[in-house]
Length: 342
Ligand code: KG4
Ligand code: ZN
Image (cartoon, rainbow, N blue to C red):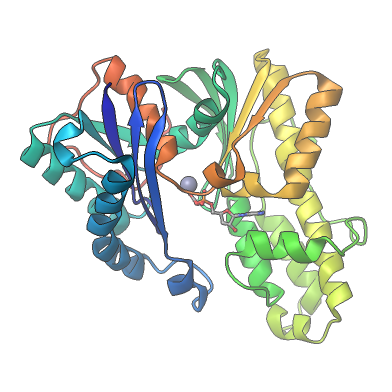
């Protein structure tokens, strides 16, 4: 049975997995760097790439061990080479190339965003064709996914990504990094209708997101418009109920925008299936409102299971599709940090 080793080092998780042609996961390991970046309130690129360097070999070793195979049992090595942090991408790419040279095996490129959508196929089976919504720390984008090898960009954020907005607003509210899970937690006791924060672009047909106005609205709510007060010091004076109300109202606004535009994309394209991946897809309120929308509008909905929402190498199983199609790369394959849309 064909076995592909997949590597993921686009941001701050060092991950590897061994996947068979049937999409069975023989082994999967993720080394998280959350602890390293937490004290800085966000990912520090230089520290991320150094941690990848330390982790990549032990993570690959452990993955092969869990899969109960030796390096020679691998049929191809796949690596996410776009998009991501340049220094982080290069660690995975160099490791993949070294393995390909040493083992004389083919190299496969993985688009990290497409992989986030493919996580739904790994978990649920037949999910294509679909509209793909990626909601992560770096991206909020909609794709027309005709086949696993044919993705067309439909629209994305014109400023912050949804996860970035969660992280920045959490910092304003003195909640720990990563902000998404922190906001979700405190929002459980908050009133989502306490404040009516803006839902930018929602009344337009355009398939685009904008979260910077929402972020500014939270800042003004905390510090007052035009006043030179740091939001975090303003938040320190609020009760935890007030923080929870702001968090819940902010979360509701993000979720409404994501749900609204995903439904628009389905209507505009006539597609009947929506697949969602990326870290923000782990958000419980988002999952609930998306399920409600699927029930009322009648489309098929697949949201990646929690452990496949945030970065992992199992979603790199999309490499199996490229393997089957004979789509291999030369060893001069480059890292492409910026967004490559198609
Ligand atoms: O997909 P991911 O692991 O990495 C990127 O490719 O960016 O996404 C990380 C993002 C972070 O911004 C984090 O705050 C957000 O996903 N996130 C969440 C939740 N869990 C992670 N956002 C909202 N609610 C959550 N439960
Ligand atoms: Zn990601």
